[in-house]
Structures are given as C-alpha cells and as structure tokens.
Amino acid sequence: MSHRKVIESLYKGLCDIYEYKSSKDPATGRVGKPKEVKVNSKQIPCRLSYNSSQAVTQAEGGILVQNIKLFMAPEIVVKPNSKIVVTQNGRTVAYKNSSQSMIYESHQEINLEIFDRWA
Image (cartoon, rainbow, N blue to C red; front, side, top):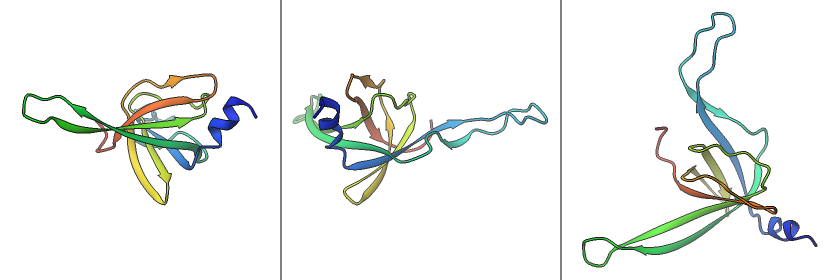
C-alpha cells in the first residue's frame, strides 16, 4: 500500500470549502455585494487532528491553547482565509484556515481556527 493510501485511510471526515467574494454582473458590469460561495463541488475526504499546548503569558499559569490541524489531499486548493466546514465523528463545525497550507507529496496540512465571521 502506498504512503498516500495509508494516510488517506485515516480520513474520517468530510469538508466543504467556501470563499467570500463578489461577482460581476455580466449585463451591467457592476460588482455585486460580496457573498459566501462554495468553491468545491463535493464533500472532500479529510481528517481533523487536535492537540493542546501551554501558551506563556504575563499572568501566572498561562493559557491552554488548542491547535487544530486539517489533513486532506495535496491537490485541493485552499486559499488563505477560506471557510472550511468539517463533519467528523457526527459533528459539523465551521473553521477558517489560519495559515498557508503545508503541502507534501502525500497530503496537505492546514492550521485552523474556529470560524467566527467573515473579516
């Protein structure tokens, strides 16, 4: 079994990718109000991974920070600040990518944050 097939066998979730963009009316040439647009045509197999780390602060003790990472096929294009809706383990949660994708031969990794609203 290839390295990529092994990684893909761990994918337990599905995701959709959205971008916030405006479109031009072909009849008038006017740019419309920006809106959320789904940029993939099907749910993409993926896997969420979580870990926590202690962030150092000036206050005593520090803050516990959760790191969320999404794994998916390397050929999927995910632009910065895209909204990614992931369904895994019976839960659906909206995230935004907080960094450029780290692309490898067998997969890509995207650091995520919980989606609050479009900036």
